[in-house]
Image (cartoon, rainbow, N blue to C red; front, side):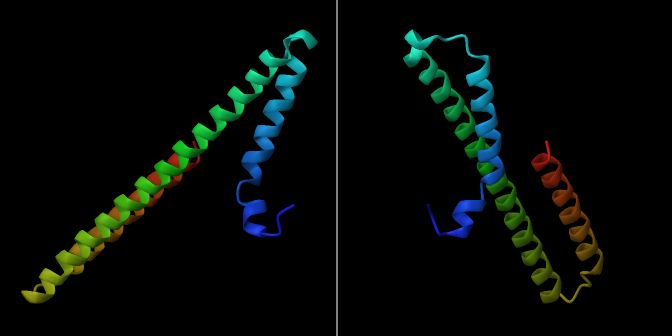
Length: 113
């Protein structure tokens, strides 16, 4: 067994759900002993589907983070502009904070779906 704590725990919730789904499939399967290969294929399909879902979720989170980074960079550039031309950036900064908070709320709602 691994001694890397993060490796052991990072996807533990995912692993528990996958195990429960595989166990339900064992109970619900109408495959007999003669259909061992068909049953294995069902189990493999479940694992493949959940791995796909996990990958999709990770990509979605990365896209949100990239969108946030791009947004923050644009804000930084605009604040630099305001500083360079000696214009108060307070209104822009408040708008940026509101946009950031809205993006966080949207990201959290996507993660909780």
